[in-house]
Length: 78
Image 1: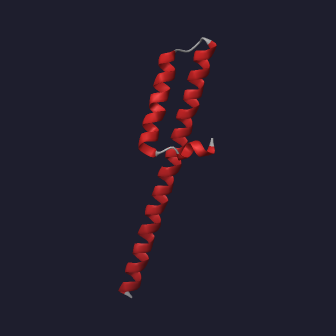
Image 2 (image 1 turned 60 degrees about the vertical axis):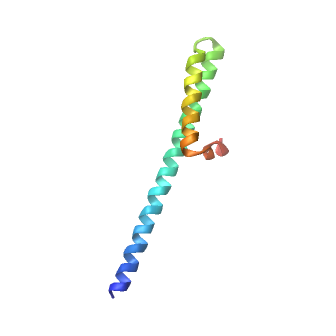
Image 3 (image 1 turned 45 degrees about the vertical axis):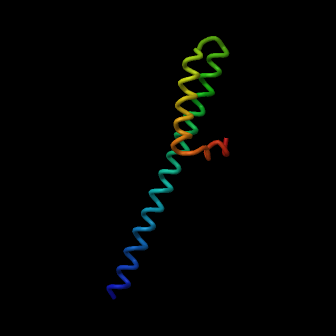
């Protein structure tokens, strides 16, 4: 009986770990999408004359930092 409970506990822990990983992936995707939107808004504002090149560069740097950390999989859905 103890072996059964140990296996059940291990499976439950694996399921929790997989769930946490999925949540982290979704959060990284959302953050990447938000950064991409900010870059687009900064670029648009710059081209319209109400933004600056520095703001666009900051948005680009933030996006590149996110990609370095989490990858660029969120770009495939864009």
